[in-house]
Image (spheres, helix red, strand yellow):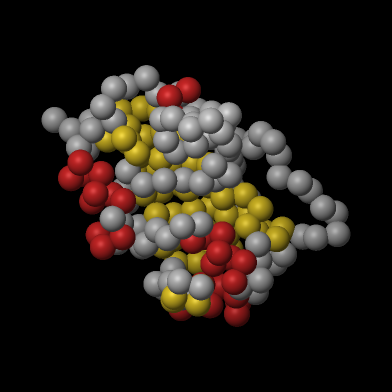
Length: 180
């Protein structure tokens, strides 16, 4: 039976078990389960759902872009994305490494999330807005590059869902086993 762990990765934690001298916290600081490995990655400055498994085939199915497993992100962006910016995300955005696949993008009310530590810097003169962005690929820092390409840099990035799994009910820095 495969083991699958849902981990709500806090901001600042590396998506690996060793820090290679960086001094940043790693998965080993939160998960003491031998033989599990992350299925995909989340940047150090991103938070939210990270899946870990002991099953190499399941890991590949989750992480490999060829399987197009959808990932939903809750993204706080700088500025107020208008219809044109959201349409651009929905059509696909040209990045340095080519066009992205079309995404599901919509403005959302600020989600009821845990406070981030450290908090996002608040600027009275620059508005911000939350969007939900669902993609079926996973390039390096893709969501951040997509929002920047349409003129709205990412301030906070929380991966909420991977496939059918979400981080609903999993507090930051905690994990739980689920059925693979």
